[in-house]
Image 1 (tube, one colour):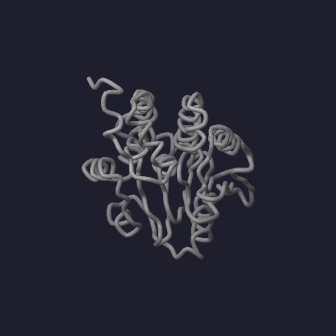
Image 2 (cartoon, one colour; image 1 turned 90 degrees about the vertical axis):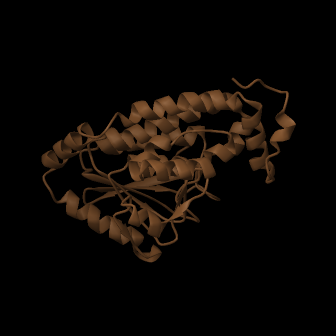
Amino acid sequence: MADQFWSKIENGIAELVIENPPVNAMDSVGWRAFSQEIDRLQAHQDVRIIVIRAEGRGFCAGVDIKELQRHPERIPEVNAGNWETFRAIHRGLKPVIVAAHGYILGGGIGICGSADIILCSPDATFGVPEVDRGALGAGAHLQRLFPVQKVRQMYFTGEPIDAAEAYRLGAVEKVVPRDGLRSAAIELAGKIASKSTIMIRLAKEALNGIEDGDLEHKYRWEQGFTAQAYLTAESQEARNAFVDKRDADFDRTKGKEKHD
């Protein structure tokens, strides 16, 4: 719901802030509302550029796994909210800058991978723990940030990389001290907001058009495998272990399902 984030508009810059303690994970209602707010800001006549950032311990921990444990029937709605959020950022014709700090996980990767420019603080870490949560997704967006073999290493191990490595690999425009992150993002946004609105809109549409492949189609492909994964006993055990704060024991799933 809307109390998981807030926004304001000033000098042509829309500031959209995730603030949902303790870890800035959003539930099914939150993700859907977040996508609708981005669409609203993209259509707002006073907005020239959007800055997405967060308050709290980290940028975004993705979806609310505990909600999905209680209500597995909401998995399609969470997937839809994620897809619509990333589409709104990527396909919306006003540029989006992300200013990220701390952990950037799952859906946080989707936000960053959909955006036009990323700034981060030195404590930022980029990761996709999906395999360890019994899920899939965000690989398409991770591959928009990092080289394909680095993506696979991160995806298969679940191990994050830090801000310095993300900068070295070219995903991040600048690493900025945490207390100056917002001001750096607003300053950069101001430079872009001062340009011709029509030219920036055309530039983003043109740049989207020359990208390799269709980001939204690739993510939709991934989501099909997420739905398939959720049907397995091993996925359920991974989510149970996460909620129970213990190591997953996949031996207990033996005999409960068939593997093709």
